[in-house]
Structure formats: structure tokens, C-alpha cells
Length: 585
Image 1 (cartoon, rainbow, N blue to C red):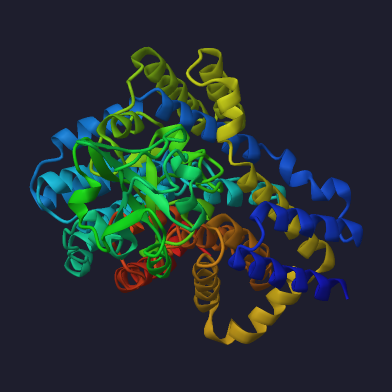
Image 2: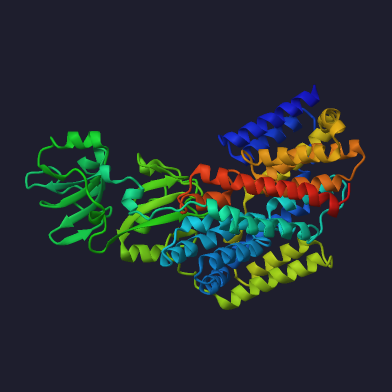
């Protein structure tokens, strides 16, 4: 009965992770409550994963990585690289894969991708090349670079932590760097040859054309007898009818209204709204429709500009609506449209909850756009201005990080103490504030990993892992150990599509370890293969790094399916061949 309950909860967790109807941390906590309430695990076992040193390692890396970003040292290095990357497409393509991949061996790959997107778009624009030729390779390289060290991805740290809890030796810092570098270099070689030929060539079009915005705009002349006169622009009768006032042309001035601007006689209002509402407004007294369709020039007259903004992983706008963050009041810019994974969202813009990788088409003065470029975690595409390089603090943070890596990799101190020390020193030397240090830690990820570790204990306590292991062995044993290993690798690759990489690995790992024990082979071989396979699933754009380049590169789902499938198959074969060589069965 307990086995059935645990397996049901496992399937329910996978389904909920895939649906994203509930946050991953909430799903994990619900699982812990049920498992503890049914006495399958004790409270001590439920929370044992949260007291593990790998949680400290992950939290510390979040702090150190953000300190490196905030001090401007990463932008300084990115800027230097883009200046010296060369202007030949092949040289640039190699550079933007090799160097970001190396950096992502020691940092979160989503952060690395976000740092490079804007400068790459800008360089591609100067070269009159399509950014789609460079952004997907960037995302793939940053993901594969994470396979080179223990701290390259949260999945590596989580699997190592689970191994330690299960009584096995945790992974060394550079234990799998050899095979990781092979995976990384094979990925580069694939994208420089086969993948390059399949990358789309995105045509350059105007922003309003790209966002299909023309049919929603019109100009309205406010006549002398109009009831709109004296009304505040954003709470006027037009607003109540479903229109947004984007621009006001008054005499010879063309300006963006703010929350205090009142409408005057003879104002020409550039408004946005549904076409059905436009038909109704034509009958309104005191106004005259000047045009039903406005061309892009009307949106960029005088000092007014259009720009695309990318929502990055650590933006404080994430999970909030445009209305909630008061975008206009905060930034002085109007959001005209939102693009998400190639689909443009046009209705009820204010109610759109912003997500990682969203592209915002904004309109405003050149001055406000310049200000926006200095805002952290909001990238204005096509323009790259590094964060002010705080040389002393940046060098200090980098030094703390390097010393932590050296001490940890040489086993002079526990890794958790090394990275915690580097994080604390970064705070003490004011490279990052205490408040920001707490803000940048991805608590949801830590809860997910700690909770799924406890779920592994539940599978062990009930015998669910042995039940599944026996079933797999009975089914596949006639085909040999390598086929069984391949089955676990492919299952992990499949689960990383609806779930996070770390969650997928932690779901498969307990069963895989028990299967290895049943077969009498090396459990470490299975653990390494599962860990690496969680990082080579590139078939769909659901990885955060891929989501970040989806919009700016103007890719389609089919592009990732076509290019990523071949690379994923190649890397899976590589793992199945090389892992048993490095860690004999």
C-alpha cells in the first residue's frame, strides 16, 4: 500500500511539475507534508535534505555569482571578449560558444546566457548578420559548459548531495571534467558544422511589423466641444472604452503622456485598442478619427523611440504584471506589446504576468531608454552598455571565488565552507549587500532539491525503489547492462522536458542506484550518466537559457527540435560510450 502511495505521489509530482499550475517548491512541500503525515518518513528525514552541505554550496554560489555580476567584472569581461571576438562569422560563432561555455563551468548558465544576449544582438546588427545565427549556439554552449565541474549546474551539486546522503562518496570538484570537456567540445563542433547549416536566417523587419501592431493603432483629434478636454489621459473616457493613449501631438510637440497629463483641445492622440472598439468610438461626440492604421514613423517621431526589452532571470519584474510594477511611472515607458516564445500578446497588456525570456516592445523618450540601459536585469536588445566596473570590489569577489575553488578542489577545506566563506567575504567587503544576498538566492530551487532528496528516502523506506528496480531488471536484463543504463539516460532526457534538470535527475536517481545494486554493478556509473544526461537534453526550448534566446533570435519551436535533436542523440551516445570507460561498471 505504501509503495503504491509513493509511486502515485511520484507520478502526481511529475504531472504538476509539467503543468506549472503550482510552483515547484509548493509541490515539493505538499509531498513532504503527505509523506510525513502518513508516517512514511519521519520529520527528521523530511528535512534532512535541507541541512545538507550541498544546499549551502548552492546558496553561496548564487550570492557569489550575483556579486560578480553587480560589481561589473563580468560585463567588463564580456565587453572585452566582444571587442576581440573578431568580425568573421565563424570566428565570432566559435568565440561566443567557447568562452561563455568556460564561464558557465563555474557559474549559473542562465546568468551567463543573459549576459551575452544583448552584446551578441548588437554585434550581429553591426555585422548586418542575423542574431539567430549566434544566439542558439550561445545557449547550447552555456548549458553544456556546466557539465565540466561540480558547481557548473545545480543538478551536479544536487546529485552529489544525494549520493552523499545515500552513503556514497560525493563527487570531486573536477571528477567529471574530462568527459564534460569532451561533451562541451563536441557540442561546439556540431554547431560549427551541422548545426550552423540548420540555423534560421531571420529577416530584419521593423518592430511594429514584427509585433503585428499596426491594426491596433489610430489617431484621434480632440475637437473643441469634446468631453475629453481636461480629463487625465490615463483615466479618461477613452481609457474606460478600452483604449490606451500612447502619444500626444500638441502643436509641434510629440510627447509621451504621464499620469498627470490632461487632454487639451486640438490634441492629436495616438491610441491603441481593439478594432471593434474603434468602430464604436467613431460615433463619440467631439472627436475625429484621423487614421485607422498608423505606420511605424508615427511611433518614433521627434524624441520618441521604440525598443525591445528582454526580461532576464533575476529581474525584479518576474512573476508580476505590468500594471503591478507600474511600468510607466517607474521607467517612463509605455509597453506596447509582449512577445513570449514567438507569440505576441496584444490584449490586456497590463494584466500580463511577466516571465523569463519575455520581450517587451516599449515606447518612450530617448532619455528614458538611456536610463533603462543602466537598470540591472533588464536588457535593451541591440544596445550594450556594461554596468559600471567597480574594479576593487570586482577583483576582490573574483579572488574570493578562485581561492574557494582551489581550496575545495584540493580538499584542503570542505566545499561548503569554501564557498560559504567566499560569499560571506563578498558581503563583508560590500561587494554585495546583505539584503541583496538573500534576495538572489533561488529558494524555490533549494526547497525542490532538499524536498526531492527526502522523497528519495521515502522510496527507500517503502521499498518503492527496489520494486521499480526489479521491474526494470526483469524487463531489460536479457539485453545487457548497457541497455539498462541507456534506458535510465533516455528517461532522464525525457523528464527534463517537462521538469527542471535537477528534479528529473533526483526522480530517476534512487531507482537507478537500486537497479545498479540489483545488477551487482557500479552505482557511481549510473549516477554520473544520469547527472550528465540531465544537462544534454536540448530538444526543446524549455531550458531557461534557451527561453532567453527564443524571442531575441526569433526562433520557432521547430528550430530547436530540428537542431537540438541531432545534438542530443549524439551526446547521449557519447555518454553511454564514455561513462563506463571513466567509471567502469
